[in-house]
Image (cartoon, rainbow, N blue to C red; front, side, top):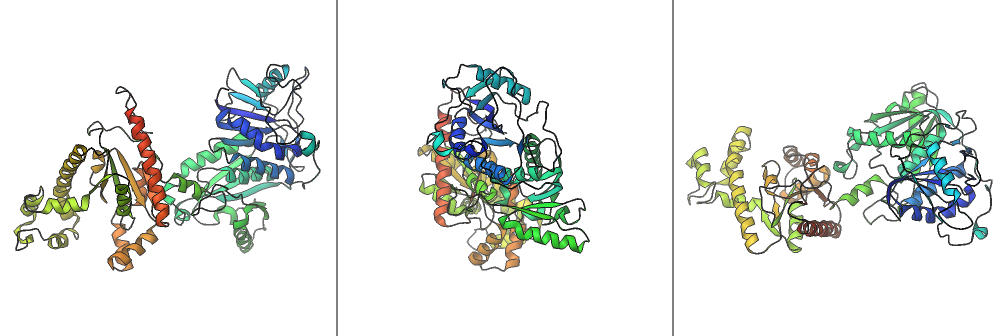
Length: 559
């Protein structure tokens, strides 16, 4: 079966039958569509006969919400798929909006239309396919030459044993509101977000106000450096919402405090929360009363458990878990660097004070890497006869020398660290000297047949040494943990530790220029797994590069 980038899945089974059918249906669809899969509930849609199939109205009930939640939960195992349930034909009794009769524009026009509708002959060549294509082209903005596929999933039990016909009658009607509010970080929009947003759309008659956490609200987030920029989260939210329910007005705003406009907007009628944010909803109502506004109706949804979560991840589906899984992976393909040899492959490893960078370097050494410690190379450059020795004396005078002729590093340190100009004067001498020693070390590693070198350097990016490496790997740690580690390691005060970090490049600045990110926040065995994953993926990249023809270099482009 051909694989398509985008598709729309039209589900014609009775809603009561779908709950148990969803998993095998999605498994079948995932074999055909690889990127974006739109799903539309059309129970009872007739694909036989000569008349044009038309969309069916579905009342918005708690049962429908549960079905949508079940679909997104079942889809979570297909992590390649961006699933989007279309809500255009689902409405509450109090919502007077008409079902869209025009073609619905989708951000990713489907290349294939799929359905669970089954014919008696079980084949693909029948009039039902033509009707399906007619329906799809009349309903959605599809790609030209749309293909249709009848899925015929393999259900575990015969239909009559588990699927009663028609709705089972369970589920209370949803009460909709003119203006609804919801808040969140919405980083790396995942299926739990989609459940939350879908319920919000079904509850909303006119305007959905969405507060997106930004700035100070992100400070305590796990791996905040990997949170997508606000603009990207805004774009992803907008695209998803307009796809699933284009008839609503979406008011998306950044918030830097827990309340945002929810406590000042007089038009709001309802707030949507999860089990863990219910107290926040109650707090919003308390503040609204203090501001002379009506309380909001609180609609609570359940959290969705993540069956794939690891020991150091949350049990629920969460963005922090998704960020955690990015650790050790290639976030940005490396740019080609024709100025350095292709072999050995050089990794520039960096990180702030207390990040655990050196421990990661040791773990990589244990896996077979040749490690170059820039602190040690710096000491070497200062030694008599070293590449920086004479230049430093000429720049700072002979009074920085010890009786044995070596440079007194404490003496020169007391001069430069109180003056940025003097510090720059020193680094302009020492950094190029260290770079020359690195090049010698890399040549020695090549002579020994080493395939991977690691340049362990706290100032890798500041010194411009990233020009000597194939990839930049950064080790991050929350500032609070870094302060504790520095205090314990160096016996300094909290203020001293914070000042030290403040004078360094931030984690976010490093991550922005990195190909791979690691974090040593958790137990040593967790760090080891990260490093092993990063190492294994690196070996795959190196192996892949070695099999690419010379005229098509693997490490050429960056996005």
